[in-house]
Each structure stands twice: as structure tokens, then as C-alpha cells.
Length: 99
Image (cartoon, rainbow, N blue to C red):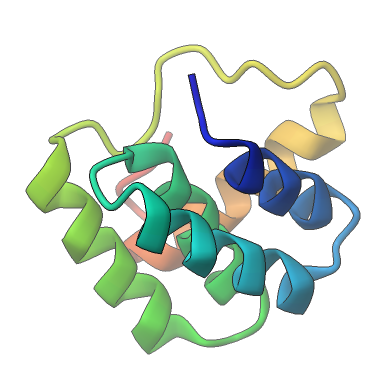
């Protein structure tokens, strides 16, 4: 289970308030640096903000925690949320690595 602050960051992400999401996710990482989801969400935010170097650095850090870039089951009810998330991961990972 994720930290509450990570979930708040994810909510901001889906509201497309990427700056606010980034701030919350950085706090979540400070509180729980070994929790991979915070890094995934942060990489998505950075990518949608056009901060691709930071997005890629976040993906690099994520890969030190887990080889799984994205979970097999994207648990978002709204297909548009899933596409927003996956498109951000594609950008962060260099386009070809996320299916």
C-alpha cells in the first residue's frame, strides 16, 4: 500500500496539476525512498512538464529499486487516466520501452 502523500500526488497528476503532484511525490519519496510507485508517478509528472532529463533520471532511480517499469495491470478506471500515465512513462523511458 502506498503512502497517503503519494496518493495525493497521484490525484494531482490525474487532475493534470503536475507541479503540485511533483511537490507531493518528492515528499513521498523523502518519507518512503524504497517505494517504487512514487518514482513512477514522479517520472510521469516530469515527462508531462517537459522535464525529460529529470524524468529519465527518475526512471534510472526506479530501476535500482525494481526491474518493473510499469505494473502489468494499470489499475485506473478511466481509460484517459491510463493513457495519460502510460504516455508519460513512454516519454520518461525514451518512448519505446513501455507498452
